[in-house]
Length: 224
Image (cartoon, rainbow, N blue to C red):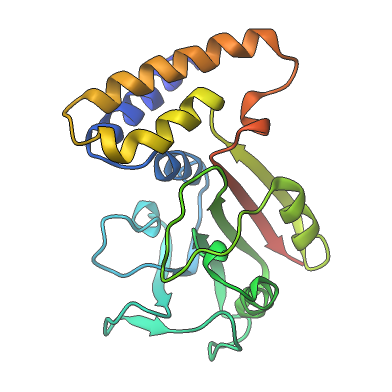
């Protein structure tokens, strides 16, 4: 277990050195815990991007990419604020990272995702919480763990919602990292300091600091 934690920590260090946001790093670490397969659709992504979450999946039949704004011959053009023209009950897995906060009609988005999933199909994704405004083209919402529990309870089962993060100090790191990454290795040093401070603060409280100061919310649910 300790060896695994050390390996993950060095993964953090490597990704931080590459200039990736802490939000995306935590989402990637959590995503890689799941063995997904079958016919997959990933929203908000394109085939040639290094940031695709689906690139980490091995046992799949087919991956389709979908987005409203990406202009690419291999990306299906869809608007999740409206009804989408994708076949019902056609996907085993829907990958849905950093999408919902950009949709004004998030209830319709849930309805459309539910429609295209097969029975017992998996919806996996995440949204940022304590994170900067990021327009694509706009940024409307920040959702909490109780929100997702309520959103999914009627149409999905095996509901798992996680808060991602470490505590208030790493939140501060996340906020300034866009600027400090311009100086080589500074973000690695700042993250280590903030991570250790959050670990120290954790000894003085009876709750998990990430449940009060989450960088992102992660969800995995199955269609009823």
